[in-house]
Length: 385
Ligand SMILES: Cc1cc2nc3c(=O)[nH]c(=O)nc-3n(C[C@H](O)[C@H](O)[C@H](O)COP(=O)(O)O)c2cc1C
Image (tube, rainbow, N blue to C red; front, side, top):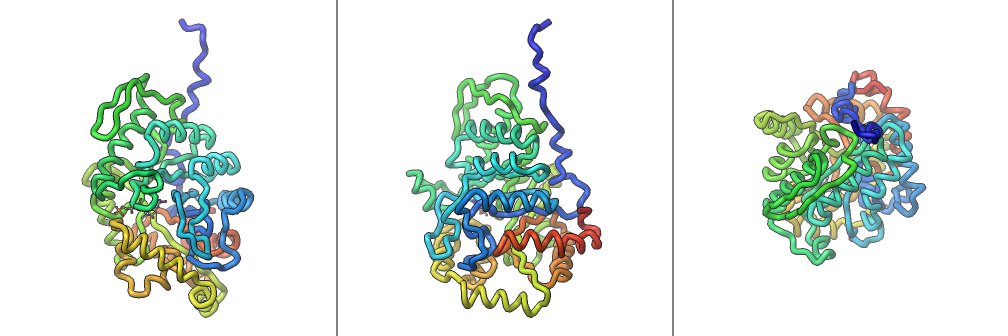
């Protein structure tokens, strides 16, 4: 019998109890991009936008989301912004470090880290992720992004591979991370893209069998990756006319592979007492505080200069600059609290499991949501809190 008591090492919990995946609420809710200057709500210089200028500001948003009973915080991974007046994405808190601090500050919300496959070696991702899962007491998940931004690859002196090859690399990367999180003892890995000798990462995550994995993608290759590796697929709802069909197709692909895939989408909320006030606010964003120069740079980088399928809707939008200014590239949910609740209800009936939300002013938006919209979602049977 060993004289050493290892029971202290056995801190583990069943990942399937995570409310963000299997909680009782029909519609799960998260906050999107609360680690970035400007957030994801719109490309504007409106003074209420988050500035990621100090930690206190970002911490306050995370605490408000936790207090409001939301299920998840989903950050955006960026290495550089667009350099315009609004500072859109210019300042971004690293999603692992931000995740650790947010996990420690909050008590119930599930915290994701968005991780770029090409820039972060899987051994580092596995180590940092497991560390985060322990800090979060089993409330941490990995949002895997395969990379699409040529400018960011260049910052690392790297060449961006072709679209589908990036997902092949991501697939092997995910295999390594998962093996590190589950293997008993060291192992060798001899792959097409990664070679590891006597690899080990201890402690392994608290969540068993694995922390939740999310993937954001639109292309067939991306969605195949999600079916093979993820528990949640995050799709860009902006410009999608047939949400039910798009969601149904993704779920069908997963079902054919014998997998369950929760579908999350991105929205921006503009909620005012009257419909006219909400519409006036959109005009104000476009006409008075819109950052046209940055929106044009966004089009050049994301729409013209990238092969990401997720931006197809922007390519098809003749008013793309105005749309980006007033929505930040999210599906816009606009109107009175009743109208907002109705639109969220519709998305839920169309099969969307969770929504990652953005606002122009996150502080004001989360506070308003908790007081004016959450009760209406309870009435509609979508939420219990
Ligand atoms: C909702 C959503 C969120 C995303 N968030 C990020 C991100 O934070 N960082 C990033 O580099 N790419 C992000 N992406 C890009 C995707 O991960 C992916 O690399 C890109 O969409 C190209 O794949 P696709 O052609 O399958 O869409 C996001 C995509 C979507 C749909």
